[in-house]
Image (tube, rainbow, N blue to C red):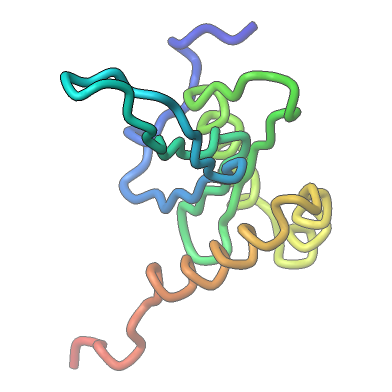
Length: 131
């Protein structure tokens, strides 16, 4: 097991874009006891996180996915995703495509969203050269 001393975190990078994969949100009915008696209410419960996709640069993306029956550790998920993004920095475009082909299908849509987002966010303005 990796100790927290060795885990990568968001603080280890200047800029990191993050997207989480969540289970569906739920509306849960319950009965609340008030001065006027029992009152039916509905609670909103945000879906539990079970995956993460990060970007540390244009096209430099990492991911982590927890088995649905396990409990997602945000700290360890961020570590794994950042580690994979860091690996991508040392790969050629061809190797990166092969590396990204290993992404679980359940993260595919979120990965594509992050790829588009990172290209826009980390875009280098070619027109702003010093003359």
